[in-house]
Length: 277
Image 1 (cartoon, rainbow, N blue to C red):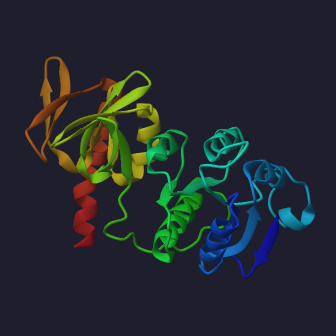
Image 2 (cartoon, helix red, strand yellow):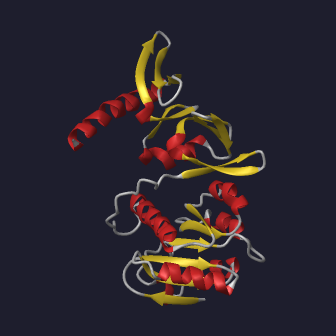
Image 3 (cartoon, rainbow, N blue to C red):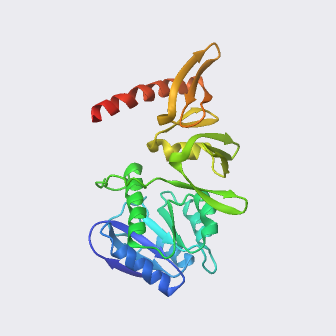
């Protein structure tokens, strides 16, 4: 394990069992102005020993309930404990660090999404791609209230989350902006786009929390919709429903418990837009 310090910023742990990969990851992270400190580990077991350490030189001034690192950048394929297994251990932490995979294995993208990875970077990584991941970590840290808020850059036009879905043995990346509504199907969710639908292994509640800031709202125990696509709010004897545009019109029911928030959000959205004009 080694460390490198620069100035105030994110504390990041890089994990890779190959020296060349670890050196490259350390260089890309250490060269980024968002990063204040880089720690390294040669495998997942060493990473866990470091994360559970009570060494004051590592912990610094961090709160007792806060992880000693803000993020873990890990390879997927490592001997012993794999990157995916490391991710599952991290989810049990009281305040787990953000997780980013840097790997040459594209087929693991869907599994990475399922274990809650914040980003998935294909090797060879470059500085711009790493910076985009770090930008997401800063935003996630600010929204979770961990640490002092940092000024965030305006998101790039292409900074849209993508969702890996399995199609006939291949993994396709679906941009979130293409999703019109999401339908709950047990522990799975079905993403509906203009081109069709895609089943992903993630609960609707998790997508509701993850996509709330992107303009998606729960309108029913079974439906999450993109508010920007709502063209009508209808009322009938059986209750309210919404009509979605952005493709063939689609009418979806609104449950009574979600009606008030939906109305408030639909009224608030145009007011916000007027204030920006």
